[in-house]
Length: 223
Image 1 (cartoon, rainbow, N blue to C red):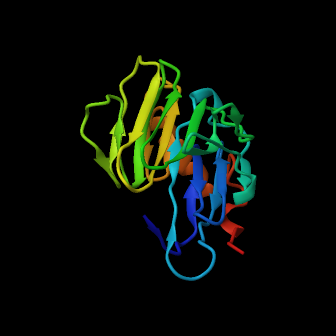
Image 2: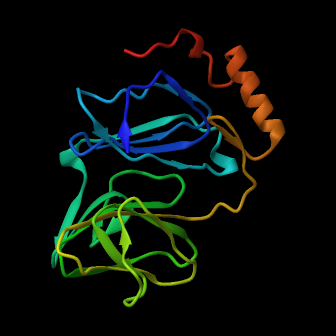
Image 3: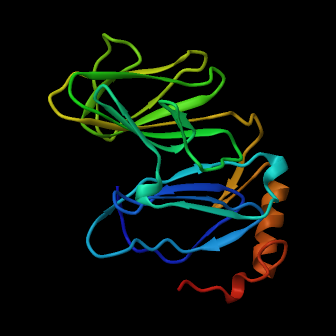
């Protein structure tokens, strides 16, 4: 997807994982009790990036915000038998990301050369999905039909992980994202995500009156 310059936007009571493009690394922001931020792609031209929003558990929604950033060269990588992985969150090929995820999460950026394959373990109780960035690949079952770029595959729960095959003549790149289910009710309004409508109403009120985490919001501006 192409990123464009945006107006300052509010993110509250969510986690935002934002790999910032091929040359800029990744940002993992825990908004907690409230944070206001601006997303401004650097440089000119077209920018490509992915965003992942992960809900916080009810017990963590009012924690203090936290910001973690990895430059491109700081993202751990591993490579074996024609398969390369960038470990943005979680672990793969024995390599662990330094990013702390309050909700247990994996965020893995794979590139498979032609005629290569890889099996990634996923905790059997986790939800997970694949998004194909470029190329096409076979996922899960050896005789299944290839899936092309810009498609999402939602994985079933209860297996031992995911196997991917690149049987094409061009590289296959995809992200594998998985996380531990919270099994809590979700109520969402704009950027606000809580567990009940009453909590949403209170959050909107807090933002409007500059309370409970938003004391400095009215005077904030992007640099």
